[in-house]
Length: 433
Image (tube, rainbow, N blue to C red; front, side, top):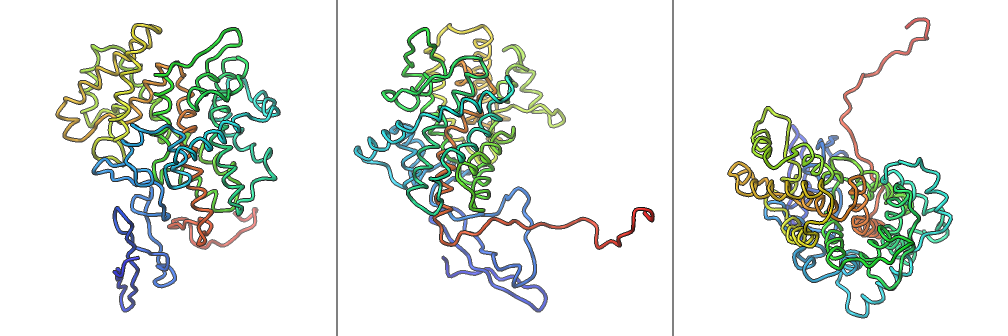
C-alpha cells in the first residue's frame, strides 16, 4: 500500500482514498469507501479502468507486448516448458523441480478417466448439439460425482478439484468431439504425455493403432501454454464472480466455459476461418484489404489487433513459428479446401505485415489468427475451437478460483448500477389502467 492518497472534493465535503501500488503496472485508487463517504458509485462500462481484485498470477502490459505468468515471460515458458509445468506454476506459484513435476504429472495422469455414468449424460444431448453446450453441462455435472470432496475451505479438496479439472477436461473435450462424429469414446492412456494423450483420444480408431505425431502434440501443448491464463478477462472474471458466492469449483468453471463460448471472447479463431472462407481466393485479398481500410465498410480483418495489446501479441510471435512447422509437416497432404485456407492465411499475413496502414495502427496478427489455422490443419472442426481454448484456460480459471477462495478478505461480488428506469409510480388496479 502506498502512502499516497487521492482527494475528491464535493462542495464542502472532501474525502481521501488510498492509492494502491502493485509490483508492476498502473497504481490503483481504492474507492471501496466512496459510497459510504460521499454517496457516489463509479460508472465504468466494460470495466475498462476498474481493478476487480488483487492477483499474483498473471501480468500484462499491452503497450509493451508483455505477458508473464507468475513473473516468467511467456516466451521463456513456451520455449522451455511443457503445459503441465506451466499448470503447476499457475497453481502453486513456482516452477516445479524434477521430483515435483513427476509427481504432478502422475497425479494428473491418474485422474484423466471420467465416471462411466457420464456416458449416459453425453447420450442425453441432441445428436448435433454444439460441443460447448455439451461441455458446459458435463463439467457442471462433475459436482454431482464428487459432492463429498468439494469443501472449498479445505486446501486438500481445493487441490484435488484443480487436478481433476485439469486432468478430465481433455477427456471430456474428446468425448464431445467423438460423439458429434458418432464414434466410440477412447479411454486415456497413462503412458502418454498430456497433449499426445488428448490427440489419441480425439483421433484414434478401435480398428487401428494410433501414434500421435510429435510435431502436432508439441503444437497443441504450446497452444495450451499460450491460452492457459490471460489476467481478468471475461471468463476469468466470471469464474471469480460466480465462485465468490461460495459455489463449488465445477460450477464456477462451467460458468467460465459458458462465458468463453461468446463470439467476442473465445470464438475469435473461428471467425478467422470464416473470414478466409469469405475471401475465397488469393486473388481476392487486395480487394478485402481495401475493404478493411474503408471505415464505411463493416468488413474487418479477423485475427488482427487485440483489445489489450497495442503492440505485437507476444503469443502470436511464438505460435507463428509452430504454425509454419505444422504446415511444413503436412506438406501437400489434406483436402483441397484446407490447402486453400492455409495458402490464403499465409498470403494475408504477408501482405498485412508489410502494409503501412496496418503497421501504423499496430494491427498485427494475434494468437487467434494462428491458432485457428493450426486447429484446422490438425483436422479439428471449427465448432471445437472454443473447446480447445477451454481445456487450456481451465488451468488459469482454477488458479484464480483458488487464489480468491484463499483470500481472508473475500466478499461476494456485488456490482452496483446507474439506475435510469422510472421513478416511483402509483399502482392502479387492472380495470383502471
